[in-house]
Image (tube, rainbow, N blue to C red):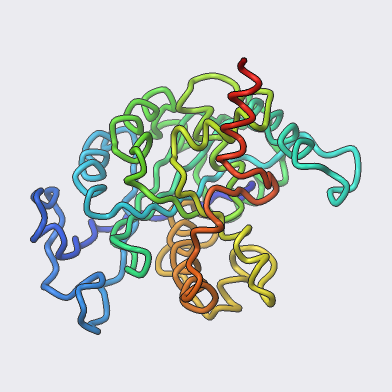
Length: 320
């Protein structure tokens, strides 16, 4: 999500839904087990509010241990990122840009800039409320020396983001990459389903982080990497809502139209926006896709409308 970043205040650990009580694995330390009936177990009991777990360098290993234990039980992942705006702009009207033009702009921006936050929300099923939310705070961005969009950094600071705290206490991208690779979130062979909003930049930053190098020059190769790391079941709500008639605009506007309230945190925080993305997806699915399902929308990122299967075929042909 472009350019606005706010660090959420530290909150107590969340409660863990009942699936951990019945599952193969024990709940992680510090998380209570809710009574039977939470998170889609059949009762109409109101689920407990989700608390956002703040992830910094001092607790990143423990938090990823929780993620590893949870992912088998909660394989639906909503994701959002925060980064310092864009510095490369199109030379023509955005409406005239092709998908390849948009990818070229994305590539140049992501290669030049640094990731600030990653937010992920975990849920048990497409209809289940969010179970866990994590906000991973990175330390690599320093506005004193790194390129950025000044208005974006001013906006993020006006919303309370403490960039000095990120520099001092945040997780290094080089340390986060192996934790992601061993978490069960990526390269899951189809076990994990991803839900996002206008997420081409989000996936680009994560792929750059996971590979430890710049993005590929070809859009088809990039989309194939999205498929390799994140699988076929990737849903971009911004793409889906083009087929919903009365829905338009950004995440906040869509949520307001659907009467979906923010579960926790503030707007333009990665974890909070991932929570809102998940709840918007659930509401859209209920209102617009209950009969036909959402499978026909998988694997397409808004703005880069080449589906991931076609990208794989194109990349294979280019490699011959």
